[in-house]
Image (cartoon, rainbow, N blue to C red; front, top):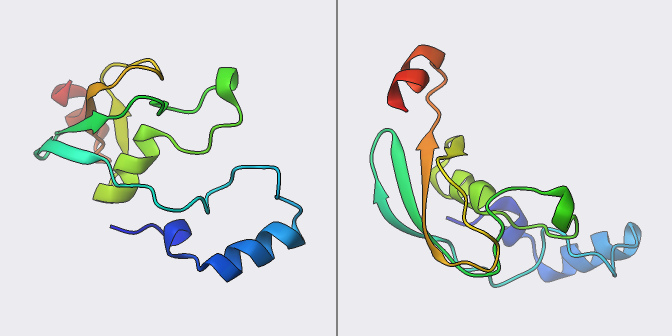
Length: 111
C-alpha cells in the first residue's frame, strides 16, 4: 500500500521542500521505501520483518529519523498498533505488534 507521502510526485516534494526550506531535513517524501514484510497477521497480532537501521517508534535519542516501524505497519494495515517488545535500531528481526481495536476491554484481554 502506498502512503500519501510516497504517492507525492517528485515535483510536489521539491516545491514543498523549497517553499518550507526543508532541503537539509529528511521528511516524509524520501522515495523508494519498501513496505515492511508482514510475516503473520490475525485480528489481534501482526509480525513484521524489521530491517536493521529502522526505529520501532519515535525517540528523542534519534530525533532526525522520520521513518518508524510502528507508523509503517499502521500505514500498511490501516489500523493502530502497539509494540509488544522493542528491537534496537541496529537490530533486524521479527517485531510483534498488537492491533488496537478501539475497545479498551477487548484490547486489555488480548495482551
